[in-house]
Image (cartoon, rainbow, N blue to C red; front, side):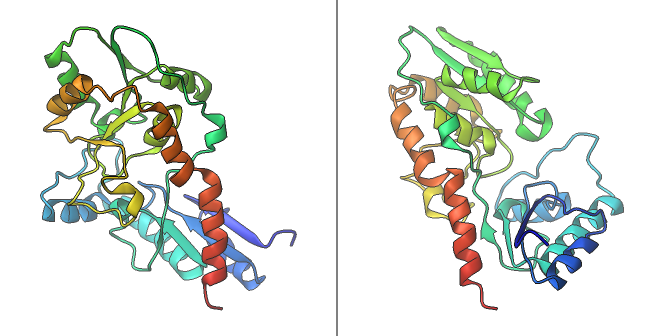
Length: 276
């Protein structure tokens, strides 16, 4: 009774999504945000990825490949597409979706991420901080680091740290490696750019268009890499004189495109543009 707009991320209040009907019957607005594996189905993404010459995403043993995994995704998608006023998602996860959606930006509050000053040290610090080592392609990254054995390069694998600790480490990094299997970059990409670090992640420029101008070259500052060329991209990135020196530019990129206030303004705009 006290609210006019409900924004759901991943799930709604009730496990069967019956609350969405009640909210709509009360004349309220609903925004539903899909964030990844809540709607991404392995076999659907595999079909699309392979049609474009891309590898299917590798998951660990915890992934539900059977009927149950498909059903719980279809149930969530069906409920959102029936009741939500607008939906936010990303192309790389939307293969099962049938209703048009707005692109979800991997947003942060950039005021909470200080842009570090240029770091005066002889070598480079490279960081990888996976939320899921299998999905993020960590084994390929570690293999590349081991093969290269670059002098004056320190590599840190970050796991099981709180947000404040990760932010501090990101401010000291020259280069951050995010993920190598899912195109577009995750939250770590945005966080790293906002602290001024350069970023390597899977973009597949020119092949897998995310549908938004700021993720295309030449504006997007992200170095593109996949599981096959990560060793070469990492090597060339380390040798690049620009790495570690574009801190202000990287932070400004997130302020222009990935700040949370931008997505909130877009939500209001999209709601107002939607015909009754």
